Length: 286
Image (tube, rainbow, N blue to C red; front, side):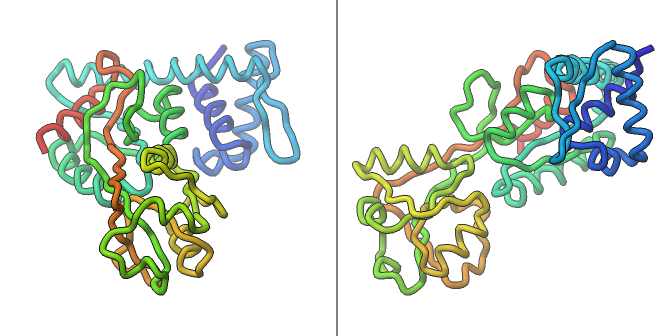
């Protein structure tokens, strides 16, 4: 007979890419994870996973099973919070996905005050970039997430407008300028982010009538800062999440302002978990 625990193991293996990683994240032994998957495959009468040298991959049957398992577990996990909400209490887990640059400055302070108000809610924080966060929201891995607007098909609550600035080596010719022209910046070798603000930067540069000379691409803000600091190029980065000590780089305002607009998003306000709705309400009044 199919067991909910087996479905949870399947999701863990699918999300973490292997039996060992799933065992580590769930606190189970690897043999127990293997037995759970074998029992589920026997019960469903189909192979769900293909073992490969680099990990495991879902079969077509496995992809369908994972999709249904997420839906089933999400509804099961909402039973207790929904009943508590009907009794006037907000309780249960809240899986919140955030952009790394927003976690420390925007989300952490609000989580502290939210925790003081709703001590029965346990928050699990996931960090990733915009495509990952949207995928987590769509497949139920997260109930609420920090997104960059616009985010079609999601219910959103604005958080902040984050100004973008030029990032330059400290000794660069433009480093002493009061503002940096986007057109001048575009003539330099450019280190372009692969993160969520990439479309915002490209659109802003296009609106300024320029085109970037992309020499390097990197995902982590710390990596971009280090690359610019060694003289590999210049960049445009969000102010949110910038460290206080920038070392060998400086920031300067842009002559043609570029901003990214951050918001909290849920797939649907009507069907979101009580804890997610409570967090949205908390943001609105904080």
